[in-house]
Image 1: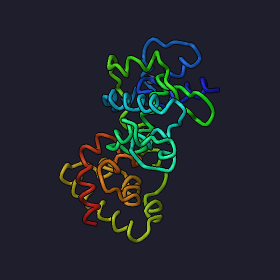
Image 2: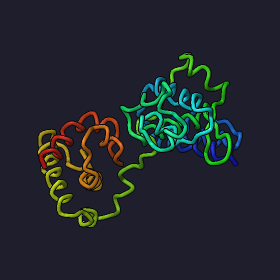
Image 3: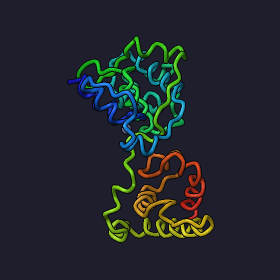
Length: 245
Ligand SMILES: [Zn+2]
């Protein structure tokens, strides 16, 4: 069951061709990328995740390979919870080394390390352990890891069927004001770049931003439909609009 679950995670997290990954699950190698799956058509944005991976792997090692993704993320983010205190994990050197990223971001890194076989599920209750063979070269810095920048973020086009007005109707008054402010910013930005507004952000994404009201670019990064390139390009501007709205 674990092996099957791990192959499924590998399939969803892969930055490469999904057809190749799927066929590999059935032991049928495909020599070249298929050219028509979503990853082949839209290559995933990746970043050098070597250091992040090292932090996760040390956190697993130093907590005795007995904890699941939720607790490990809490350790990395340095949150002093009851469970952390009970296990005295606030004294570990890895405690708080991952403050600069969100919980979701760390879970994405963990999933991708499971997908690569560096982390394995060791027991019940989702406890995670190291696969020594796969983890060692990463910990020693002998292997550079390219991780997916925005794991499991569904394409905005999946929401194309819903009329914008319906999505916007779900907002309360305060959220609606934020949405209108974001829309004015998007209109001006679109005019300046001479592109249609939805190319900047779809209504569904603006609605989500208005609802979540992120206070930093980091918080904005976890909202669906805000990919790494949009974040880089518009992140600061969006936060500035929200601060004023
Ligand atoms: Zn493919």
